[in-house]
Amino acid sequence: MSYPFRRLTALAAIFLVCALPLCAQHKSSANAGINTLAAPVPAPLLNGKRVFVSYELGDVTSFPSRYSGSPERAYGELIAEMKTWGRYQIVADPTDADLIFAIRFVDPPELPRPQIRLGIYDPRSHASLWGFVEEIDFAFLKKNRDADFSATVHKLVSDVQALLATSAIPRQP
Image (cartoon, rainbow, N blue to C red; front, side, top):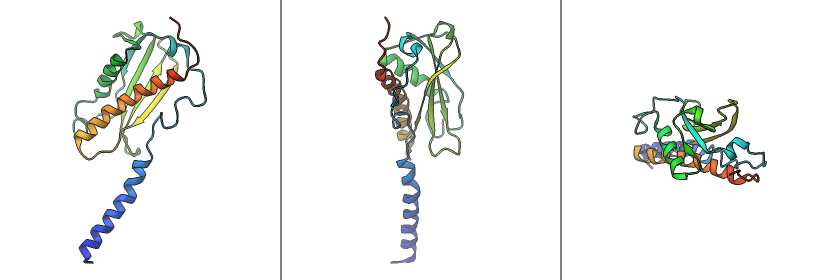
């Protein structure tokens, strides 16, 4: 075996050893199990009908270089996913809302992957009701990163749906 080939093989092995743990350790609210302890789901989350979606400024340096669009991309995609779901009415004024869904994209250097976080708040008491985090899968190509970004927003809505499905408390009309 020639020296350049051995060096290339060694570099490929190092890459695999370093990259595989990143692929295997995916942080997700769903991976931990949505409400596996059967904690009571807060009544405002179950009974709410109107949602204000709040855009929390996160890491802006990933746009448009790593991901297409702009920093409020997760905000726009969450609103579209919520409308498709149809459980809650999206309102433009937080004073008209029963719940606030606050979405934020984060990509700090200490995390292995970028995350999209969703916090759910009661607008009257300002109490945090629940929260979810999903990591965006790693991809080399921008088109694949963009697809993974959108899939991550979809996962967050699925997390909320799963939480509501775990509740034994019937929704009041």
